[in-house]
Image (cartoon, rainbow, N blue to C red; front, side, top):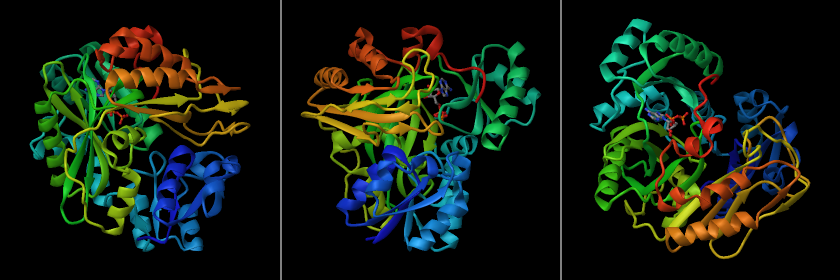
Length: 454
Ligand code: ADP
């Protein structure tokens, strides 16, 4: 096993990776920006290296600074976590050239599945259902118009290089198309450095269901069941569950089989997630693949008992998979993403945390890097904690989440806790009657997909 790895990330996921490394007796190197000097990932890592000032472009996205840190400290591999450089094939290539291992899939897999329009094409080749729409990135407004009238409005325009719920526009009729395409492309060019856009049919009330995949270098690929991620605001996940109350055993089998088939088709190694949209009719469509660990991985860990980060480390080291595909989920798990933001306007709320009392007790897990007096820097994602509960069944898990949210005290900043309290007490949520539009009806204007800006 690796003796020392570098973690090219911050916040709760950096800590999560340190925990897994400690249990596997792997030494850890933290990298940090000057804004993160007092962060727990720096405290808990065995070694730490400052890689630049607060803004991500100068620190957590600074490939040469991170590689230098790995070389100086003699780290054998890099774990990228999620966000930042986690899906940057160029970074994985650069590490390989420096003989540093990448804890993730091959750069080729990242290229193949990381570009969303290319991934659609790959999925189609593997015989997986994809939504009607572009074969490749759009080359002109005329092409978009012809395609949209063929698949029928509404359609959604997406940035091929997009992510994090950004860079999407819903188009309701032909009169909006050309203008939306132009703005979407300009904005994608600025935000992602790539203005290519593709188009697909917009489903009005689907569920977001995703499958956790693991692959080893010997061609074995398994799935570890699904996560239901339909509760979203502005196309970003707020609450996730495993298993999904929408899946019959037959549907779980066929979606899981499709996910494994696609991962096998691209020779996928390490952990990844295949995302689908599911209609009420039971039709499902490939949406995208994330070639990294997901924020919501703990719900899968709770119901399968598998430590996904340890698996990533073992697989990157070259061990063979020993877990069986489609393990029967044990009980039910729910995760609430606690963000430092106003619960109604969703405006970020960085600043000093005056009081921090996470809940505990049976079946409660809190993944966080926050502590009392910690100052949340303004530069990064607003996630401050993931509150995860596990119980024998969904009603008990909901009850447990209610009390855990009631016992979670964070003062000094605004958080999404009040919003999560409302969600878990909502009748429709309790019945499992959810879709990606759930929050929109719950909080009309505020949660609607953001139509401007990427
Ligand atoms: P990102 O990579 O930015 O997360 P995704 O392609 O995964 O973007 O989509 C994020 C969310 O946007 C989905 O979970 C869903 O709510 C919504 N969405 C994306 N594509 C469609 C579609 N074709 N129809 C309806 N909703 C969609």
